[in-house]
Image 1 (tube, rainbow, N blue to C red):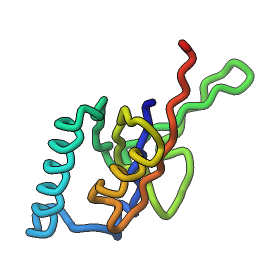
Image 2 (image 1 turned 135 degrees about the horizontal axis):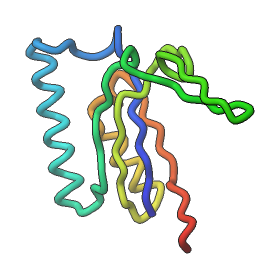
Image 3 (image 1 turned 90 degrees about the vertical axis):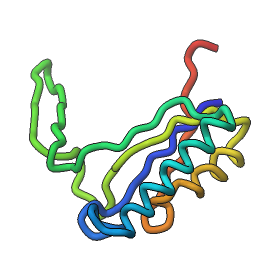
Image 4 (image 1 turned 180 degrees about the vertical axis):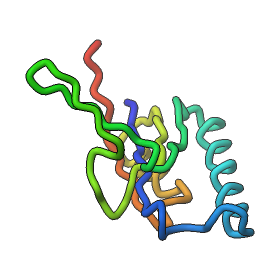
Length: 118
């Protein structure tokens, strides 16, 4: 079953800052995690997202598109990236989610992906 691991953190105040040795260590941890899930055969997809100041939100009401700058919701923690993993069960998915480096200062939301083809 596929599980989406949504990576949330406070993009302004959490985690190491780019250009610092701590950030380089964080990126090294991400590269190691990427290698682990690929070697385990559970990696399907994953990417980081640009900061929320690049977001655009689209809503359609009464047949009209309403487009606004910024994220859908103002929150303390923002969606910063994701992994899509193909795991045998939720226990395996949450075990991998705990290894995502941002889990140390943010949160990882794990959700099963709905399969409409079965």
